[in-house]
Length: 320
Image (cartoon, rainbow, N blue to C red; front, top):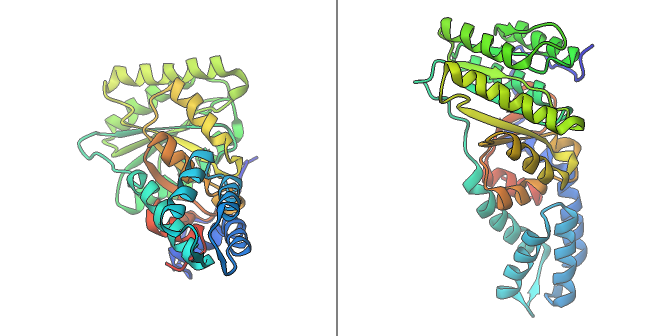
């Protein structure tokens, strides 16, 4: 049985622009912010009460207390005591959010000199990690790259079968072993075979069972150790998938996985199921880790490179 629905992979013309899809996906987060801003700023002067309400609203939208205080204070510096409209506040917030997330909006770059470029995906089970691997494989295949996948979450039969379905649909070889097999041994074999085949990219799935943190930490570190025996600089990219619906809990997940392995990029999934899209802003400000892609739906086209201006404007309900 497959955990999550798998979209069809045939190339179909996109009926909506990416900005429209992003805006739709962020609609729950946007509604929380825009309704609140409109309620606070209805032809009134910017006073202490309004600033306090704005700060509380931004915290409820998961931008985090530090970011919320800084944004409210920034608005006060130029507009305190003056009449301010909801649209002015939205414009201000969009600009400030863009400044915060712009440095982390970095595309995932495949190093052509690595054969293969090894990408290790980590994250708590249920964050959409396996689905993300499938979508990345499809995108990389569309760019003409030879992509292999390793079903390294060997404890969940569903994750293995899910990856095999993605492999069939994308035409990517999938290396797998029976349930309970050694994940590090599987990763080693996958890298060995992908290297021999001249693959461009190897995507390695991993377990995310935080119930036994020490065991998971040892497993992930062992995977890294064994693949370094074949490629000393691998994994070249280690991506952490985060589920936006967990809100501030995403912060603790970054901390936990940073302790286990060297994370150098984030993918934020399920923004469409959450009113907590603002957590991306808080993560950008706190951790400064590149955000390579965001997901706003189940469709294969709903995982896209993260673009700062589009996200900032969609979050506060402004047009692109």
